[in-house]
Structure formats: C-alpha cells, structure tokens
Length: 254
Image 1 (cartoon, rainbow, N blue to C red):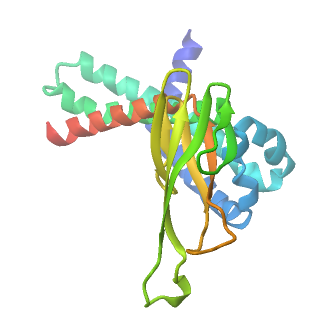
Image 2 (cartoon, rainbow, N blue to C red):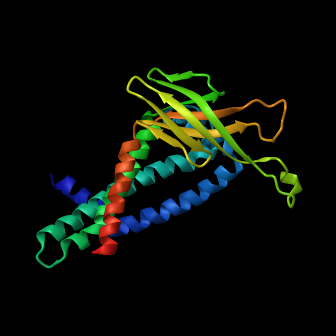
Image 3 (cartoon, rainbow, N blue to C red):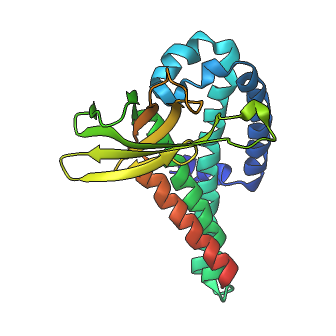
C-alpha cells in the first residue's frame, strides 16, 4: 500500500510534468524531421490503424519510427501525471475552507480532465477503428460496412474562371459532395468537402480526392475518393471537447 502511495506521489510531482513536457517537445522536434522527409511511412497510420501500422511500417522502419514509440510512452506517462496532479489539486480545493469560489478554481482542472478524455478518445480511435477507402460515382450505391451503404448524389466543383492567374484557368479550386448514407436505422444526407468531413453515428467520411480537376475535361468522369472510418472513440473525444469548452466558459465568465 505504501509503495502505491509513494508511486502516486512521485508521478504527481509538478517537476515530473515539466520534464515530460520538455522531453515530448524534443521528441516531436525529431519526429517532425522524419515525418517531413519520409511521409509515406507515417501517412499509413490513418489508413490501416495503429496496431497494424506498428506490426508493419513501425517495426520494419524502426530507424525512422523510434521517436514515435518514445512519444507514445511519454504521452502515456504525461497523461498519468496530469490525472494525478489534477486529482490532488481538486481534492485540495474541495476539502479546504481556504477557497471561496471553488467553481472558478476548479475550471482549469476541468479542462485538464477534458484533455485526458480527448487523448483517450484518440487512443481508442487508433487502436480499434476500422478504415476503408472507396470510390463513389454519381447515383451508384456501394456497401462499405455490413450496416452502411453510400452513394454520391451531387458533386459541386468550383473552378477558377478569372483572367489574372492563367495557370489556374478552369482548374478546380474546391469541391463539395453530397453523400446519401443508408443504414438499417435511417437514411441521411451529408455534405462534405476536403477540410470538412461528415459524421454519422460512429462513422466519419473524409473526402480525399475528386474528378474532374479541369472544367470541360471531356475524358474525365465525376467521382470522389472517400475514406470511411468506423471510429469507436469519436464520442469520447467529442465529450472531452465539450467538457473543455465548459471549463473554459467557467474560467472566462465567472
């Protein structure tokens, strides 16, 4: 029992937090170099999931990915450290008569708990989510998962039609696709773009590519390349985001 208590006190030390943050910054600085120079190794994490990536790219290219494994360890230790430090401070605020406005004092610690929620959500996402990439053409239904079918109902592409930038003449600037989502529960429509994914239940839809890229391109057919992720952690990190906003609201307004 004393060993657990001593370990709890050690991991709740504020100096441990400072050292962990410093090591994470150094590690990510090293990681930035490898991600920038070897993007093909790390871009596959979102496509195949963390476990499959570790068993393939991660271990096969350990000379390039060692920093990532160290980052996971440091992030795990930092999460534990944040939870213990926050819990100690919350317990002190709730049990002491020194603090008059306890809610305002608790607001930063609410945000700390929210960050832990968000990290747990992303961990569940990378560990257990299933990802599939499909090509959708107008009005053709494709079954993605056992309980989900998708079809492209509308594709709106905005082209450059000005005169000042000749190299962009009639080339695509942006794209917005309307997707019909069918499941045993109901049928819904989602409008998505490159930087605006769609969310339905535990699924997220990400637009990766589209065609035609040039207006009046006779040989190009309309289609979109879509990544569909069955994200089991989505409501965990969304809940964390709401908790963070709540803590921030208390901190600013009260």
